[in-house]
Amino acid sequence: MEKRLFVAIALSIAVLIGFNLLFQKTSPPLTEPSPKTAAPRTSPSTPEQPPAVSPESGPADEPTAIVPPPPPVSDTEPAAETTLESAPVTQASPETITIDTRLYTARLDNRGGILRNFILKEYSEESADPLDLVPHDLPDDFPSFLSLAIPDDAEMEKEVNSVHYEIIENETETALGKVRRVQFLYQRSGLLVEKVISFLLSKPYQLQISCRVMAGDLPMDAYLRLGPGLTNHNLVPTDGNMLPPHAVYLEGNSADTLMGPDVAEEKDGMRTITGPLRWAGVQTKFFAAVAIPYRPFPAVEVVNRVWLKQPEATDELAMPDPVTVHIVSLICPAPPETPLTLYLGPKSYRILSAMGLELTQVIDYGWFSFLVKPLYYALLWVNSFIPNWGWSIIVLTFFITVVVFPLRYMQMKSMKKMQNLQPQIKAIQQKYKGQKSAEARQKMNQEVMGLYKEHGVNPMGGCLPLIIQFPFLIAFYRMIELSIEFWHQPWIFWINDLSSKDPYYVTPILMGATMIIQMKQTPAAPGQDNKMQKQMMYLMPVVFTFIFLNLSSGVVIYFLFSNVFSWGLQKLVEHVLPSFRKSVNNRGKKAAAKPSTKKKS
Image 1: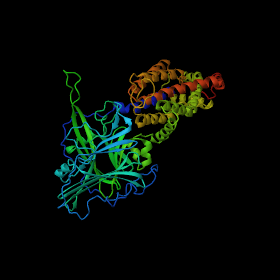
Image 2: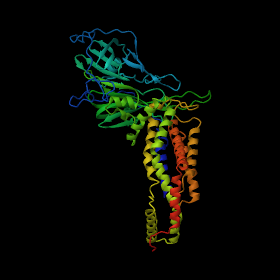
Image 3: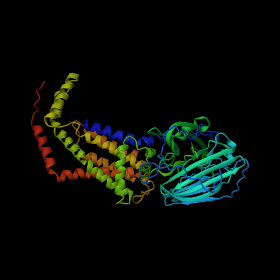
């Protein structure tokens, strides 16, 4: 029973770990939907709803999202009494504005007032170039990042996203620290467009955006586009674990996601998500662009564009088939009176937790997130002393192994006791051999349980530690698999990226070998057939090795050294604590010599 339960638990771990690998969603090539842009037909704000974020200011490290009141109107803005009917057409030359901070470099283009680049200085592409969150290899007919959507007037939308805006810049000191404010202004007879993008220099990866469109004396509903897509390396994922850009939003207290292929099935490749939504955005496995409104969004629009990308030919004679790429955008209100906050950066649990509003839910740690969080902060603490993340994982693994080793010790004692009772258990089984009635089997089980009780043996004692350790195994797996801290981080030698698989499969094979060694050192459970035990001894490591071949190196390192440390501590106990062996063996000898006191039936 011990061995069968151990096998069941181990296979359950294997199924959960391999789920993402074996059940990845794939979508067949689709015809490209209409590129028509649409946005939610809703009011840009709902005053009756409570604010999603507080307008109060505070320190950057407080666990609340901070959004100040709308910035004051600049003295250079057009006077309120100016009539649009008589306003001259603004003339502006092409211009690019660069915002350079410690964490990122942003480039704004006055043609359309859009975000051309948002380069993260602490993260890099596979080519070692700094990572740009704004995709720049999309087809020309795709809209631009942070462009405007005006659902009621397609011609006006085309105009406001193609003209060159006047730029007014200033930098101010606020309760939130330094703010670099860039105002884009365009006006002609009957039309005024203003887009204000404020960079919160004291807040990591945070911006504020507001938009105003006036047609004559009437305001028009204007919406902001997050996307299309996010980063270039995820447009065509080469890693089976790398999710393409998709929508994410928080309704109530629960975050949900929406993949591009699901939206592609809708009319015109669009789907409206009704709220109230506390935040919404576009994300990949490690990065996110999330819009946080002052009041919850009444609705947002998710738009999917299908791009049949033609890969580069591998040789002159072969032309590969086009690759179907789903490019997701999110369109949300950006009212001028209550600017929304935009987080544009890595999915770092440490940064997102400081912002509050349950933004950490963009990282789906799963059922055991309550264990992931303390493990995450423990690993950050270890890394503050050991700057290499690979060695930090190994050190934390050692601490975890030591903490849970008392459970392992209980398992060892229980299995040794049960092994020493094996002769008496076999005698009871021999007594009822050939009797197939349910009554005879019940009596046999009663005698076996009576033997366990007489000698103080808990038949579940060897399994309980495994059940308790199971959540820790899954929590560590989820933490390493989804935390950006390990992305493109080297360990030693050939392992240059802890978030990707071992290119030579050395660590998974070593992990399988340590499992075999551990199982050989584990006492056989009572009644376990030797042939079956040998089969399990080799089958389970093979299954685990196969699953771990394509998991991130950081996960494999954890499981590998967890096996090594557990086996080492087990041997240490056996050699340093001879009293443990003596007490168990003596009890076993007494149990074998002493007949059962249970009355024979």
